Structures are given as C-alpha cells and as structure tokens.
Length: 337
Image 1 (tube, helix red, strand yellow):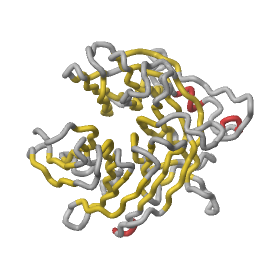
Image 2: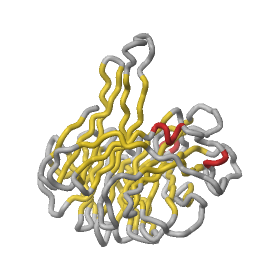
Image 3: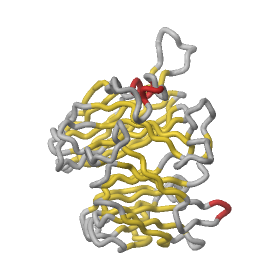
Image 4: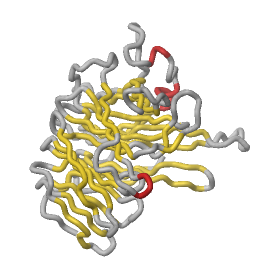
C-alpha cells in the first residue's frame, strides 16, 4: 500500500504481528494492517520529520521521536487503540530510539531478571548522553509519567563533551547482560559498544548501569550518513565434537556508504575483561578499548543500503539470524551466514 509521505522508520507490533507502524517525513505516524492493507490508526503529533517509531516488548507502548526534538509516548487502551499519554522534549533532533530487552542481569553474577518497567533509550543531537526512560503498566495500570528518566554519558570518561551523535542503536542480551551498539556520525565510521545492567541498589541514581567496553572502525560514513546497524547471532557446530552444543557467535552488521554492509565479530569485545575495573567509566588512564574484528562484507547492492532487519531461524537446534537489506538501488536482499 502507499502512504502520503516518504517513510523514515518502521516497527512491527510484537503481539499483533500484522500491525506495522510507519513514521513519515510529514510529521505523521500510521499503523497499518499489513494483511488487510488498511490504516488502523493515524497520528499527527510532531511538527517535523518523525525519524523513529518503536513498540515496547509487551506491545503496550508505542514511542515516536522526531526532528522537532520531541518524543511522544502512546499506550493501548481497553479498545486496543493507542492513545497519547506523554510527551517530552530533548536537546536536539532525535536520531535513534530502541527499547531495552525484557530481561537484564545485574552484572554481579545474578540471573537475569524481568524489568519492572519498560524502558526505551533515546539518542539525540547536541547531547553527550543517552536517555533511559521507563514507563510502567503493572497490574493493568499504565503510568502517564515516566517512572524514571536517567542520563548516561556515551564518553569514556563520563564528561558532557559532545563528541558525536548516536545515529542508530541496536541492543541484544548475552548471558543476562544487555549489549548496546551505537553507530556514530564520526568520519572514522566509529561504532561504540556498551554493556547495560540493572543496578540492584535501591539508593542508586539510576536503575541502570551503562559501561563503555569497546568500539570498531571500518565502515565508510560521515556527518551526512544515515547509518543502520543490527546484531546477528550465528551458531556453529564443531564437526570433531558432535556431542558438544553449538558455539554462538555474535556479529554486528553495519551499513557503509560504499553500498556495502560490513560484518564485525563483537563477541570478544563484550567478553574481554567485561566488568573489570578498567572498563568502568572514569577508569584507568591507560585504558585501551578492544576493537571488534571485521570478518566480512555483504556485497551486491549498487546503491546505498538504508534498511536492515533480522529474523531468527532455528533449524535442528542450531540458530542463525537471517539479514534483510534494502537499498537505493530499488532492491532488497536476504543474507544468511
């Protein structure tokens, strides 16, 4: 189906799988039924581009973010319609938005725990920090104000210097630890990696702890790029040890302005000394961040790759993630590893 304005962001509802939210350049966001090809709801609460849209893990919340520096939060009502419950303004145009996974660990050897609230992370221009914003729907009651809003510096030393803009983010979980990738607008094509854990102390300033653990370089990008990134999981079997369970490799797919998608092995970044003193913000002065290793490229597109999405495939107990890419060459491709 067609819409009235170019679409900048898409999100699939986790419960109503045929619902797709589309954020557009004219300040609108619509939810369409992809099977019936009809508009379920439409919203016009932004005065400029709607750059991002996302659903929470439960599907109760929808969040839109725009170039009007605003984030709008919606919640499902008893008639299964989304209604606006909150709006907030940031320091600049919103470039990235992602919901945290439903479970996170504490980083102190405890099992992962369900988050009491649903939390999204906002990245905007003119700000050195990522914003963690939480809303609750406990006992069927939706909070209309954030249950918490905390800032977490993206800089290694935790200061407020604006070094870059977080143009895109993706998140996954490994052994209960949240893993967050931030694709920056730096000319070096830098992607920064952070761990995200719950803070078990009730007296903490934020219920989350975000720590810088490494980065990677090797993509072609600049301040005008519109990059995308996504985590991929790949299970590999050791043919010499058939009884052993498959080994799981964590990859990052990152778009590059030379029409490629670059693949990085980031498992070592998150496992090397993760959580040690040298990885804490404001840690040792001789800190050397590990670099994710470039392991491959997806070649074939003849135009800029501007869309990425992933799908988990499980066959015979071996899991892999298929990667879907869309390009300015008017084609989309499927890659498996």
